[in-house]
Structures are given as structure tokens and as C-alpha cells.
Length: 396
Ligand code: GDP
Image (cartoon, rainbow, N blue to C red; front, side, top):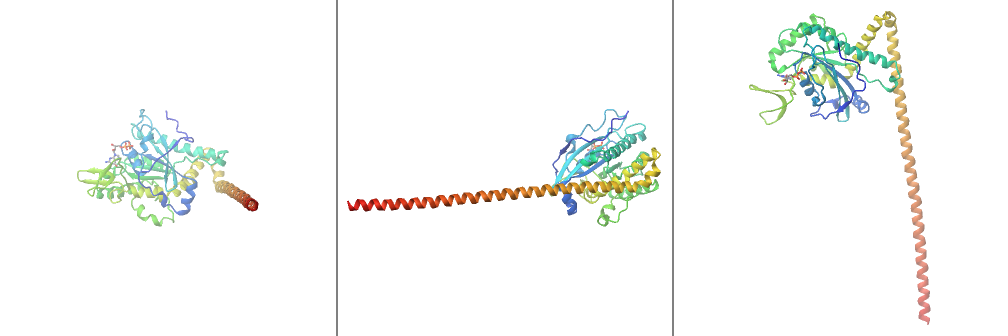
């Protein structure tokens, strides 16, 4: 019934030009340098009813035209959710981001809407399973391609009321398996007052139904610089694929209405910049860490519980994590040593080549000097012969 939702190990990625800066180069220096060698991997899933502006928003969020390679958004067979991961390589000031967007068109289109979340959960689990298998195979040494969902953006319809049943049920399920970031779709259709009220209602609902959302449900001491961003959760976002004219003649991405223009990059109009900052600058690493240490850990526990091995697994789990960490550190160290060795070999090669060139230069110089002195000697001999000849001619 469902399409094959297996891991997409060899899916081709495409390099995409950014239409405006994303801010990836603002990452802390060390991490920035690290990524110059190894690109970040960010796997973002978008879930929400059709027509809420998910595709338009993702284009706007990552300042690129993701439509170029999109597979058809609305599935022909609306009985199921068509999950479509698409890969992109973004680069800014030498910082590379491997971005995988996982769209879920068709979600909420069925009569029995609750069924729509199943293939999504199944997809998420399959990525954990693929990672689990890869950790135990030779692939581990070559570096695992992480296809696990790091963040799930859940689009809430801008009704202004409370969360719908479908939202509550889906959010409950999703939040047990991934870090869910709720967003209010088409924020431009609400007034500022409506947005404030709606956000308050959503947060109350989430608390009431005990639904953990990111970042609130995953406290971290290291979030001093995020106070401003956190105030805006759930982010009221909007998307646009066209530029509009401002009264000062400037062209900006936004939506034009009879009463004025709503700009996507303007924090006073829309929370997109805050969400982008959270995803790309502030929490990129945290999301990947959470996906590994929290959600993937949960997956392994579930897996072993099914096998009836949960108890022993719980006991061994810390040890397992430590061993995995040790293996990874060992692998990283081996890679660094190999890199250092190659670097030294290269330096030695350059040095030897330079020495060789210098020696050849010296030899050539000596040869030239010798030829010059031979020439001078020959010139002297000719001059003497000339002199002798002249003398003989004068005597005659
Ligand atoms: P998806 O099915 O969720 O991927 O939705 P689309 O991105 O295809 O957008 C559906 C429709 O909503 C299109 O006509 C878009 O132009 C429009 N749309 C997209 N984003 C916004 C938005 O932020 N505000 C408004 N008012 N309309 C939007």
C-alpha cells in the first residue's frame, strides 16, 4: 500500500546558488573551519496539510529555487502520503551545507486523516534502522551517510482557533520520534494581535496535550543567545516566490496587498529570519545531537523492547554509547593521522623538488660561468694572435 520509504543512500545532490545570504558563515569559528572540510548535514522534514505553503516556504527559507528538481508535489494516488527526500548542496563563504528536504505531500488529504501519519513515522524509523545497520557494518569505517530526520517543521493552519484534532494526533506521534518545530503557515493572513493570541493558544494546547516541541522541551544551558528567537515559537512564517516593490524603489521578497506589503525577511512582519537563525546558526549541531542521542536512542530502546531485550539493553546502553563514541573518536583520530601524514609527505615532496631545482640552478650557473670564462680566454687568445699578426705585417 505504501511506497518504499527506505533510506536514500545514493540520492544525487545538486549544487544550488543562493539568491541571498543564509548566514551559515556566522557559525562559531571552530565549527566553521571544521565544516570547510566536512559539510554539515541537515535533514529537514516538512509536514502539514496540502496548500499551507510548505514548498513555497522552504524555497524562501533556504533562499534558493528548490522547485527545479521537485518531484510532483501532489501525488496522483491521494490514498497515501508520497514522501520525497530531495538533496541540495548549499555553499556560503566556504561553509558547505548538505541539505535534505523531505516533503510529505498528500498528508491530510485522506478521509481517514489519522492514517496519513503512519507512512511518515515509518519513513522516520527506516532512517534510524538504516543508521543502526550501518553502525554495525563496514560502512561505519567509510563514514555513515546520516539520513535521519534532524528536524520536522509542522505547519499549522492559520485558523486563529486552537489546534485541530489532526494536528494534535500527528504532533503527539511525531514528537515521540523526532524534534518537532511547530510553525504557523501563511502568517501574513493574520494581524499581529491575532498572531499573538494564536501562538498563546497553540502553546497552551501543546502543554495541555503534553506534546514536547523543540526547543522548549529539550532544555539546554547554552542558549543565552537564543532568548530573542525563543520568544517567537511557534514561528509565524510566510513564503513567497516573487519580489515586490517597496515605496523606496527597493525590491524585496514578499507579498503585496492592497493595504501594503508583507516582507518575508522583515522580522517585524514574519518570523522566518528567527526560524532560519535557529535552524542554521544556533541549533544545527544541537538538532543533530538530539537526533542521535535522544531520538535514535529511543528507537534502539523500542527495537530491543520488541525483542524483549530492553532490560539488558538499558544496562548496556551507556556502555554502548561510550563504545560507539570511542570507535568514532578512534576513527576520527586515524583519519587525522592519515591526513597529517599525507600533509607531511606533500611538504617533503615539495621540499625535495625545491632542493632539486636549486641544485639544477647551481649546476647551470656553474656551467654558464665556465663557458663565460672559456669565452673570455678565447677572446684574449684571439686578441694576442691579432696583435702578433699586426706586428709581423708592420715589420714586413
Ligand atoms: P504546499 O502544498 O503546502 O506545498 O503549498 P504551496 O507552497 O504549493 O502553496 C499553496 C498556495 O499557497 C500557492 O498558491 C502559494 O502561492 C500560496 N502561498 C504559499 N505560501 C503562502 C504564504 O505564506 N501566504 C499566502 N498568503 N499564500 C501562500
